[in-house]
Image 1 (cartoon, chains in turn brown, red, green):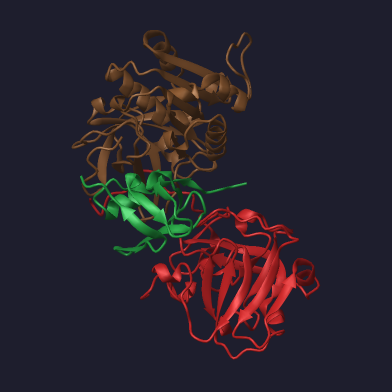
Image 2: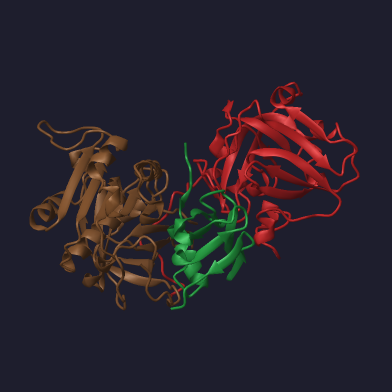
Length: 256
Length: 203
Length: 87
């Protein structure tokens, strides 16, 4: 799974906002031009730093949503947290043409590349879909046919990020299955699950243990812990389950 | 990276207030109560909880939860100041003064280390936790102190930066020579007076 | 109930300020329980005072990092052995 682990020094750079796109009522994708961006691997994140005029700073981590092939353009998808300090700025104030300070890519552990193989199980809770979507987008660009299942938990259909794209990929992609669960509200005629993830759901959706799948779980901490614990209960190897907790509220890695 | 860069339109969560004159240097006023943790939140059942004074004392002393509650209590209203620059005004606590607890031991030691469930420690001169300057508190804003804020009980030393107010405190160890605690041994100031901006070693 | 535990991957930023290696893949042996983990699989607690990395099995503090006025302070007493693959 590893390749060369020598890296350059991590340094801050300024990107320019090239485009913004609302994904749901609470989430927005922000595409940045990052000159000199040397690419990244699906699942990695960036640290974003905001500086007020008096020097006050706030820093947060955000997963990269775009595949590396789009460099020097990099897209982040940010969920606005009501009591957040950085996410409201990114989703409501930031405009095309603004500069944003960030550094990355960061994190070689929560990464999937096509050559790592599978079968692949991706388990997403809410905005935890972002790094997993980067993996799916990379998978498509790499024309990979690794057998992949995505289990995606959202509150309601309106909260499903990348909804159209996911549907489209399901139809056009070989060996990709997507299963959704809506935990608070579902439309009439809904054929997906309509509850929080649990042992039974994972038993039905996960790959058989004997196939030694690679699993990536991302979302709010309680979601990730439940999913990981239940998969281990089902017999999956802990070493082949990689988790990225977003923290109790989903606002990643608050620092400073 | 340019030192002059700032993010257009970003202010952060900070509140402007006519009370700002009450802030120590470099602090801003915070309405919420941020949670900073270096580890998992302990959950000690009250039946297992005790508070001890140990170390350089004639006789170590221990109180159970019930014993602790039999002691004279106070209500405390103080401003608190975190080294990460937020301050909160008029926080309300209830608990037992360290003067009451320390009166029950004999010691010639000059320093204490407060120790907590989960392994956290912080060090203080004895004179900084006596004379009405420190308490063991179990009630915040009229409610039992929540685990994320240090419940069932934490140390409260509001005249120093709040990392000295050890969450999940389980006792004091009296020592002859000063020993740096968890943050003091990682670059933070040994004393921590917000009015002198003693944030880091060497300040 | 707020629990601030994140995965070791969250410590990658601060560690990459210090080490020129992919530290989330580095292996750490815990002085508490002796188990071996990739840093990416440990528990990380990040807040403005510093970053604390703990053993996922026994919660022993493995690594503490503070970044203060242009200095990095690093306490790795909780790591018996740090193993890094050369790049």
